[in-house]
Length: 334
Image (cartoon, rainbow, N blue to C red; front, side):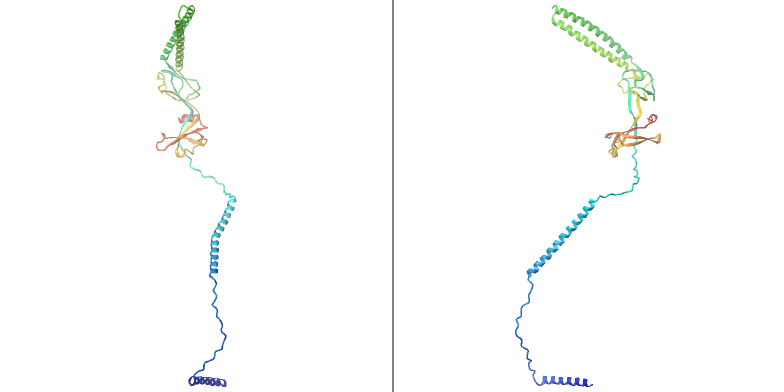
């Protein structure tokens, strides 16, 4: 309580003193302490050249960083790729059966390796024929005989002409000998003697011509016997007794073939022509024996397109030789 009373008394006294000063008299100026004068310097600023150099340094450092980092990264990538490529890579797979592709099935024509059509070389009539279809014949075997009366008459005429020529040549030889003797005796002129010698040479040439004609007619008479040119089987017969045969008319008498080995002529489509090569294996099936397959191989290709076989799509001809085949099958196939 005493402390509080003192605080209030002092506070009131101070307020009264203040009020009295403000009212009663003017305030005296307060003396400021005196300090010696100090010269103020302006604030220092960093030079602009340093800032520019520092900025340029930052730009160069950023450019180097942007330019070098991709190159270093690419160089590292190239080194890694080179290391990977230098290491051999081996792919390991498990063996598995290959998928079968659809085989190319084509129709072909069976032909024997050797086949010939037999024609007549002389005009005449068929006297007799000795072999029929399917007969096995040997080379030189007689197949048929022809009657050639015209050729026989020509042969007789040729022989008579040869006799005449030989007689004329003998007479010319004697005459030439006599005229040579007279020429030595100077009873004839040299011109006349030379004419007799030339006549002898002419007669001798006539003899040679007549002899060649007789030889030709003898060979024509021999063509009246039709023989086989090689071993084989008769696959066709187109003659009968009494039939007129004309040489050079294209009239086939027999067809002879060797069927020990056969060839199949196949027209390959153009899309598969290049894939057909010599030595390529093949299989042959026949309509009458579909369950039996014959081993074959390509032995020859034509190397050209045959437009006549298919106007819309060109074909290439190939020959397939059959290595195992029965002769009886050939007969049925033909």
